[in-house]
Amino acid sequence: MNEKYIARSSAIAARMLGDEMMVMSALDSTLFTLNETAAALWNAADGATPLRELVERSICEGFEVDPATAYRDASELVDELVSQGILHVSDRPIAPEETT
Image (cartoon, rainbow, N blue to C red; front, side, top):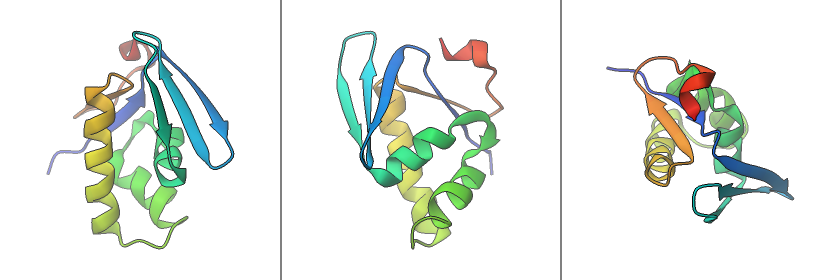
């Protein structure tokens, strides 16, 4: 199975408001609201750690969810955020200069 690595785009602005993360695309000013679980994944997206490990550390340990369900849901969220241009995904670690 191929690993997935995720990193935040540098073309965004983000801020925590309570338990939610507000993310705005600098490309078209689209605003996204991430719930507490999605915000935990967002904050962990370092480009160097495999998605499966991020899910185990950031979601499974902090929320009561089994690893398989958490990974499936996280993969769907990643696909949506990638399609919006606010996350990058790769099958290898992502260097910071690749997030522009």
